[in-house]
Length: 374
Image (cartoon, rainbow, N blue to C red):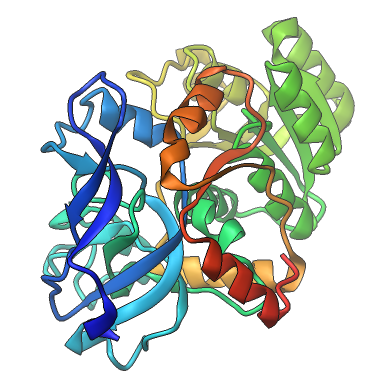
């Protein structure tokens, strides 16, 4: 298929920090592939909170850089070392880490597979190098995930970061069926996915959010208990006590809590509603994670951080979705030219779910022949 690939493509670039995206119709197609690389014809690209961080220079990204690290599409070229794992025509969810070193304690072949994503890697798609807001993207086969026939590319794209991240957070909580998981920031793009993952695993879920739209989406996603964080810490704790069965001593609260909100008070609230000796999983990335010492010292709350998924965890997530399904709240925008409408919607501040760009309508139409159900 290489002969049919154009030399230039349309893309959406961060050209200057703190400035609007720039549409570039003459961007070179990334044809300089390494042995582990795939060239993917992008079908769908999704917007993530990290895209704002890239645009404001948080990662000191070299500019210009094509935006979006959440993408899905069809493989068009396969690097020599990836030929046993992928072939042209495969539908995939794009990987984010690009070219791990293969030597460090995180990605060495003898290291635990579930920490592969922590290698600093040569780069990261859509964060430090060109991403998925384009007609083609170069990704690393080792972090790219096949998409099952019954899962749509529209669903797969936002799972590339949001799904992988909150899936691992739920896994890191390590809970058993019937236990309580609380999610602070439950009505956002990650949160409503986390609620569904947890419920499908048989957990009881407490959703905490501070937006009307977020509370509504938390309910729609199936949370057992939905609490408005605007009531204040004391009232939220009171409602969690009541929901989880307050008893004498310390036997109340969520067995684990995931923090997805990045407001200053979120981590402290998450710890406060977690039972003594329970785990708080930190996903949000504020400048500082602020937790009163009383939670850590007097209540023995264990705080853990998590990011993305390892390759095996990502495949497990896809298998789980193929079996159980997922309802992704989407705000669809058709065509790369709609980027300014997408950004305006995101910046309204009350968006439900994910803002998603359909880059290639033909791929979306073709997959209907596969009988996608999710």
